[in-house]
Length: 550
Image (cartoon, rainbow, N blue to C red; front, side, top):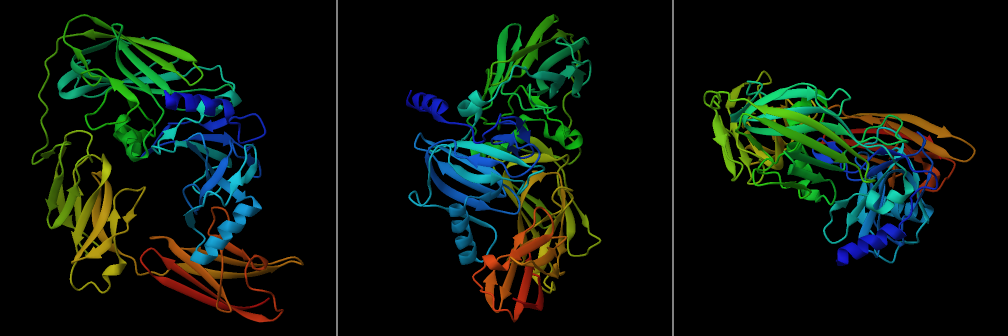
C-alpha cells in the first residue's frame, strides 16, 4: 500500500521535461538485442537545442559523459523514492558543466561517470538542467528519459508518471502469429517446425491451423500512437486466452536491471537475428524469470490433445487503455509426433546447472543461470589460417546466454607480446573480444553460444593526425582526428607545454576539438608545444607533436 500511495503522489506531482507537446519516438519496454528500452524517447523536432527541465524536486545524484551509451546524461534523485535519468544531452547547465569539467581534468579523461553529493546540485521541479542533443549511441536528436525505483533500481514505465502529458487513442496492432511446437512433443499443420500466420490487417486469422501435442504461441505486434508519425512502439499489455481461459499475461513494467538480457529468451532470438523482427513468446522458457510475465502451470504451453476446435484470443492494450483483440482457431488433428533427434555427437547441457565445455584445449565455463532452456551443443575445433590458435565453436545455432560465460584459449609460448592478443569472433556485430592474459591463456566473456572464436593480435597503433588550430577573434580551437579500426581508441590525451588539456569528440565523428580558452592554460601569444597521445584497447600508442601559437 505504501508503494501505491507514493506512486500516486508521483503521478500527480511530476511534470513534463519539455515545454511543448510530448511526442514519442520510442516507448518503455520495447525489446532490443540484449536489453529492454529502459525509458521513453521524446522527440525534439529532429534537432538539438531543446530545453530540458527536471520533472520534480530533487538533486543531481550522478553524471555520465561517454562517447557511446547515454552520451551526456544526468540522474536526478527525487524525495518520492524515484530517480529520473536524462540522456543523449548536448550540454548541461553552467553549474553542472563546471563540475563535469573539474572531474574530467582531475581524471584526465573526457569519459567520466561519478556520483554527486546530495547538497551539491539541488534542483526544483521545472528547473532547466540541460539542453537536448544527439550524443552517445543515439541515431537522431531526442531526449531519452528513464525513471528508476530508488529501493530496487528497477526500470519503471515513465508513462505511469507522465502519461498526462501525452494524448493517444490508437490501440496496438498484431502483425503475425508464430506457432511453435515443442521439440519432439508437438506438430503444427503436420510439421514439427515453427509456422507463421500473418493477420494481414484482419482481426481474425483467415487460415486454418491444425496442431497436435504441446504447442506454444508467439506474436509480433506493435503499439501505435496518434502523433507517432509512423513510429511503432512496444505493446504494454498482452493476454492470450484459450477457450476463454487465460494462459498468458504480460504487463511490461518494473523491470530489474539484472534481467535485461532475458529479453533475448522472451523473444525468438534466432528469428530476430535473421529478420530484425521480434516475435514475443506467449509462453515461458524455464529459465526466463521476467517478473512481469504470468503463466499457468504449463508455462503458457497449450496441450492440444483432443480432436476439436480450440478458440484462441489475444488481447493487446497500451498504457492508456486502448485495446485490440485478435482471434484464431486451432483444430486438434491427431498426428504422429516424431521424437526429437539431436545431431550426432551433440551434448545436452541443462539450464539448471553450471557447465564446463572443453574443446581441443579451449574451455568455456557456463555459470548456473546462464541458460533459459536445455540445449544440445556440438563442439568443433580446426586450425586457423592466422596460425595463432585453432578456431573453436561451442554449438550451433546461436543461443543467447543470460549471464556471461568465460572463454579461455591457450596461446603459444613464442607469442612476442601476449598483451596484444585478442579473441576474434564470427559475430559480425562484435568481431573481437578484449581478453586478459593469465597463465598461458586468454580469457574473455562470451554472451552467446554458437559463434566461432580464434586468437588474433593487434600490433597496429591508432591513426592520429593534428589538423591544425582554428583561430577566431574570440577563440583558438585545436583540431585532431583519431581512429582505430580494431580495438578502438581507449584514451586520447593532449598536453600543451606539459599541461593536460581536454579533447572532446565532435558528435559521432572521428574528430576531436579543444577550445584553448576553456582550459587552465593561459594565452601568452608565443609558440607553445602541443603533444597528443592516442592509445588503443590493447595498449598500442601513437604520438604526434606540433608547435602552435597561443
